[in-house]
Length: 252
Image (cartoon, rainbow, N blue to C red):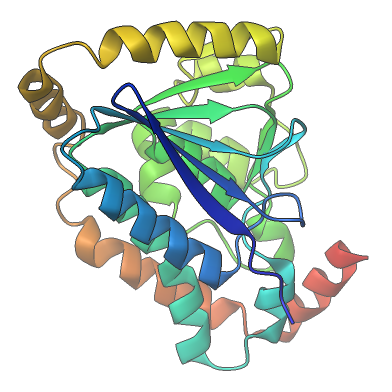
């Protein structure tokens, strides 16, 4: 049985902190993707919340992306498309959320984890927050998250990441390419700045913040269709013998 992980939300002083956790390096099986989507939608409707912070448990890894265990269990196109649609659902929930979402990227992010960081409206990271898109190496590709990542870093930087699937990009590289907004030496420094930033931001005119959120996401209205078309591409590729064998090697 694939462990499901957990999602928790704490609301304090109009700031909602959503935390996800999974024993396999904060990776995402489909059940956890569904929970995160649901939690973002619930918090979005809470009139007492002004700002959302998205974070994960632990100190070393923000998110390892898709659950390899679940990827290996996929046996039909329908199952594959449904799984990758889970990432589409989360990104669209973040895009459509009326609250600004601030990312706390405390460690490495791979694949779908990079997509989550890209879908945040402002991102704090540490020097340990390296990023990598490893999908091509296992015979698939970062198709679902590409619109979110390219929106931040551009197509050429996206190609640089995607076509070098074994190469980690530094936190400074991510900042220079606008995936990260601010980078700090330590997690303590990050959290001090994050707390000050969100406390100040949450006190601003809520209508102005809502309108700014809309401005930031202008031109993405077609994602309601696009991301699910991309999920079908990944859902097809994950069925290949190449991918199954590559995933087994990565697991070992």
